[in-house]
Image 1 (cartoon, helix red, strand yellow):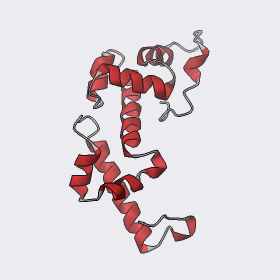
Image 2 (cartoon, helix red, strand yellow):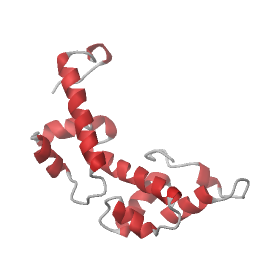
Image 3 (cartoon, one colour):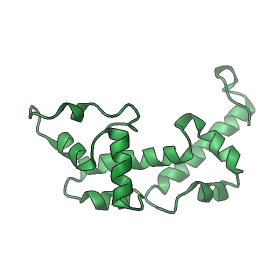
Image 4 (tube, one colour):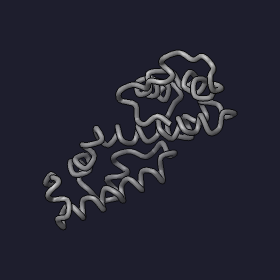
Length: 144
């Protein structure tokens, strides 16, 4: 596949590529909670070669990084929206295979544990919180 530059954004190839990318993203988002969602299942569903599929997600740091970041964003939002839910249940519900995988990925992305993140985000306005609560990691996948 050729790379798309700003001047080529409306070429037939770029239009097909963008439509395919949107379809794959929709497919991923509809199945984020499924731990069987892997590059191989996406590749099979769209009948793409592995290099083609991976090339589509280069801008997001790679396909697995894209999936992981989507899952982390979903889990972070769920921790705030459902404070009564156990973090381990949220981890499995977001498609992680284990609580430890989730905690490790979350800490790497947000610079704090899921528990600390939840405490900081649910703290009453004006309550003293540590400095790390307001500053996600530079690689954080969105900060709800």
